Structures are given as C-alpha cells and as structure tokens.
Image (cartoon, rainbow, N blue to C red; front, side):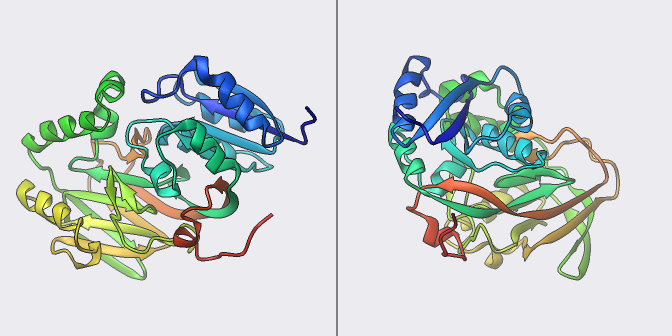
Length: 313
C-alpha cells in the first residue's frame, strides 16, 4: 500500500471502558484506508501526550484517542511547537463533552470514519495564564469534582462517579470568593461561589449549556455565580437546562475575548481545566483566545459550530 500522508495516534490506555489494546490493529487498518501511514503511541503518565506532540517531527495529522484531558494535552503540546500540526480528537473517556459536541458517537470504529472523512476547521482555543483549555475552566463550588474523583472510580462508574463526587461536595460548606473581574470594558467586584469559563455547548454532560455557541467567533462565555446557598446554586444550574444562561437570576453572564480575574486573597483551591487541576495558583488569572488552531472534525455539526463555512484546505 502506498501512503501519501503520515499520522500519529496518541492514546490513553486508562481512558474509559472502550479502548482495547487488542483492537489497535483494527483501528490502524481503518486509518490506513484513508491513505495514512500511522503510528500508535500509548501515554505512560500525566503530561506525556503534551510532550509527544511538542517533540515529534512534522506529521500530517495527530489524533488523540482518550478523554477530554488527552485532547487538552495534545492541544497544549501543539501550541508549544514552531510548526503547528493538524489535530483530531476521537473520544474514549467517561463524559466526552468535546467529542459529543464535535458530533461523535460511542463506536471508535465509526468515530475514526467520521473523523477522517471530515473537514479541517480553524478553531479558537482559550488560554488561562497561557495554559490552554479546550472547553471549560471552572473555579469554586463543584469545580474540583473532576480532578478529585479517583481515576479508578471514573473508569468503573463513568458519569456516575462525577455525580457521586457532586453529592459529597453538595454537603460541604459553600465558600465565597472576594473577586474583581474586568470584562468588555467593565470592572466588577463581589462575592462569588463559582466561576465557569467555556467555549463549548456541552459541559459535564449538560447539552446546550449555552445557546448558539460558535468555535471560531473569537469569543468565549463567562458565568459568575453570586448565589451562596447551595439550594439556589442547584436551582440556577437546573434552570440552565431550559433557559439561556443570560436569563438566570444569580448568574452574571458575558461573551468576550478577554477576561481578567483578581482574587482579593490567594485562593487555596485550584481551577479545574478540562477536568484536570490547574497546577499554578496565583491571585490574578487572564483568559484570552488563541485563534485558528487547525482541527479535523466530523462534518455533522460544522454548520452549527462554526461561523466561517468556507472549506479550508
């Protein structure tokens, strides 16, 4: 077989239930049918996918096969390169918010076909203090659940593991943070129980968390919660299922391309970035966009997710 293109698949052997090592040869053959010479590399530790992408030579396509965290790492590694690569993400994890948003289903074989018969689009990636996140960064109440939930529980119980973690967090005291933030020319101060920054329409398994999300409009969505009582927070989150975030009491909502958040005192908790803990803790966080990161994704949701419909080579 004569291959015209090169592809590296970075997979997480610990992700979800579905990725079986003995099936890799099937995935390999499938990818080869699309004209790629393909190499599979399994990650061995946290941060490994990022290192692989930042150090490999030029290839035509890098596919992440894992959860949202694996995709986050290959995006991070790509941003550290001089010559950026085209990326793709085939979801194999517990919640797979990004994968569902892109239009993938449960079958890895079908997802490979959807991906490789898809289209390359220029997508915005958010950065928090220069650290990228693909779909969500959160701080405060309920925001530590993804990284505090042990991996073996995630693997065994999937989405339920997050709900179990949420129940535990529900019983703990709600802490309020004294914060000043600057957005769209405004400077606002107050007490907030949680903050959510996102450029996705599906978060923690909620579909259409925000309405009319575009992945290439140079904006991201900001949600600041002024509610301090758990029951009010839960009610507000419940309303998001039927109502747009901009119309829910207790939630301050913005669309912007630049946000600066300053905590009055050094926060003890960490931000949760795409389900992982943000290691750097400081008083000030700056969030902005990196434009035009090239992603190959299924055609299914492109017209819904992108402003620019012109085909890119």
